[in-house]
Image (tube, rainbow, N blue to C red; front, side):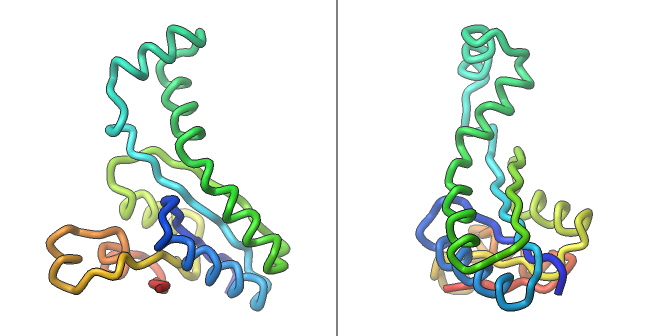
Length: 149
């Protein structure tokens, strides 16, 4: 195993995935890549424009700043990796309205061997109806997916 991708959305459920992925990467010597996908749709266009104007950014740069600020929880991935003894670690931030799609595309492009995600603890039917990220990844990812509890 060369590369493990852990998806972190900052939730308590994702913390288990972060710890599991860090442990696996340390044991196998794999590179651990932590990814956060931020939905820019959660920000009003007027807010992005106001930030761009107030900071002297282009709107695209303001969107990038919002992605970076919204995914600071990747720092806990770095701490978990360091604590577990992971040698190779990097963080990736992405913007997109479909986290499962963004994660899958990244995994395909980077030749990821394993994706580790958290479970929200929902039953199968609610997970299917709500289209949870873990459910979508389990079905559509280009590699194996471990759903940590």
